[in-house]
Length: 221
Image (cartoon, rainbow, N blue to C red; front, side):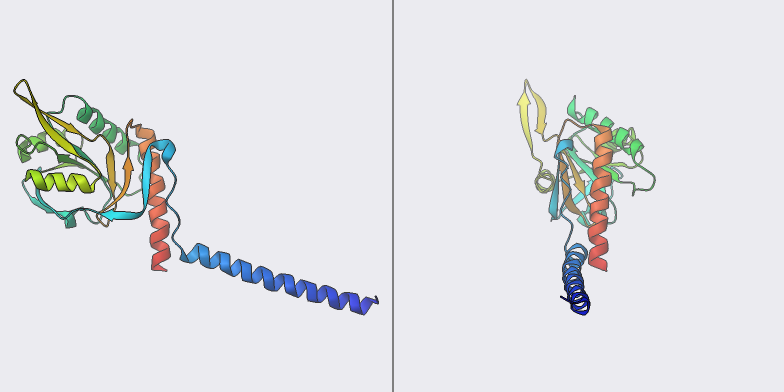
């Protein structure tokens, strides 16, 4: 084979490689740029992230300031929601304390979330009672109370349940112990099961936020 033939074959081979590489590269680019990134796997943090966030139930309830609140009021910010009640002897105080510690660990570069106690005992959790209780944990801690069935439906859409029972004439409330992370579209983005570690909660929130931001930027481009 003379030199000119070898040069020609090499040039043709190089052209094929470049074309093939360009096609593959374009497919990778389109897949990366057009398809939503999969939800992060945070199982080691007891966290399940929905690939497609789930809409919350429509509701009309009352917050700790006596103001009417609907699902629309949850839009525009991230929210850690928790179903509980102010007279809860153990689970709720520990959960709220963990959220307060989490709040202090979050980077200032992240959006600062709200923390919402959805009452499972509206008979006793008046707005005044909620205000006194949530105010102890911080200014970005809030509460919701109102019609029992409305609260039950909202809890259900947060993947939570609560049940009333009476023991020796005293009302006790059994309820879920997880945190529900609601995104700025008012949708359930993730469920974080106990035991809750504030450091892991802060890390999970950051990773979920960054994932959601990447997909939002892709959808907007």
